[in-house]
Length: 60
Image 1: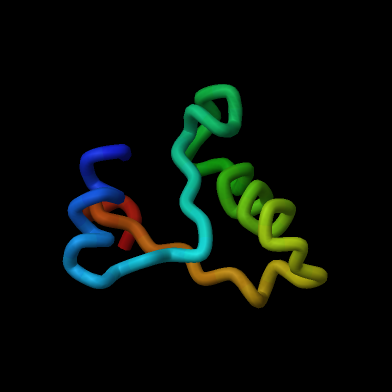
Image 2: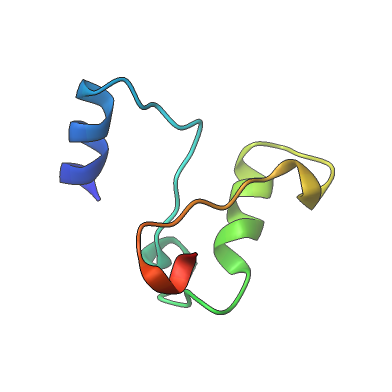
């Protein structure tokens, strides 16, 4: 993700936070743990305030 984030920032895209399965003990899709990690990091009180954006067909 370091390469992806660095290149995205050069193009003006700066997400508030991003998560990979590495941040959830390698438990990614289809489990919701990456979304929960965003909610926790951003100190949100409701999951509906989170937008999940993906870059693969299975994310869409």
